[in-house]
Length: 397
Image (cartoon, rainbow, N blue to C red; front, side):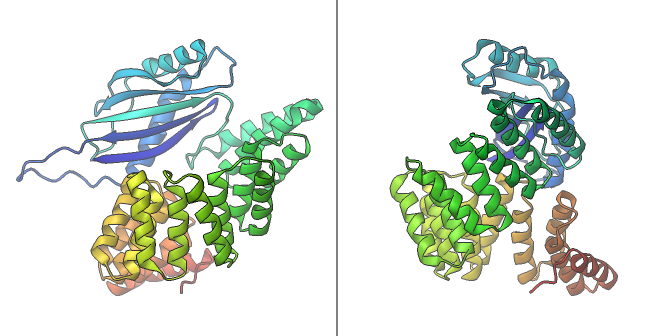
């Protein structure tokens, strides 16, 4: 089974794609296909964005979201197109179907992909996002438009507009500005769960763990039980060095939603940080019983297996994280670090190079590649990578 998850965000809509397909069986003597790398998907996503975007012109102003599902073959032909999740707005649903039909043929699948994959696209008219690295100009243009709307808006609209702009700031890694806008949205009266959660997550990603925990407490105080908030609390507590509290809220998440994988992965992460790797593996197994595509479970299980020197199993789990999330730089670097550890330096270089293609400012990728190049006596390349890693603030351990 080949599974690919990635997202393409159109200027007038969120456009998410997840592709699942059965890997082809290859005759014994057939030449192996080219390796299916993360970079293949970056290029495919960019082509897909350019092809579909001009056709996404919904006639309705519903503000709702929905999704379509279809099969795509290597030539870019579409079959079995249908509504996967209705927006509950008939006009919007028709626009989603029309967008795909008008864009056919879609770009060819990346080299190494199966003959046919199943794809699901989610459309959301109200979000102005685009995640491709080369598209910050589109996001900034959308921000400028919202700036003008904020300047002219009455008090009732400000909360919604600040929230919309905050989400845009996140797309170009302006997290401080995002937090400021989420706070402004709340001050303006937009105190919905989505806004509070966005602010909590942004604070956590910035390393503002106290502020994140304050946000989580405010959400829980407003009533209701929220498994995802307990999971977020657990992460913030762990990063604050409060291990006991992290376990407590992870257990609350599990008690609240025992059929969800998230509580188990939160607790597995805590077990890894405390060195209880066998318990971490057990929790990851429980998570995967509930969701066999849970990326965090494969990643954390791989971490535990690496610590226990179960290197083949760790490589398998790291490979699974990359298969499920080929644009995840962290997943590539997890495997690269292990390749270096077990002496497979050429493979480490490949993973690091893929990571650099996805994120050219990742100092860790240059550091691991420098190490691999040194071990292969490629001293000039190693020195260049070391200098780059240090310039990006990554000295290594």
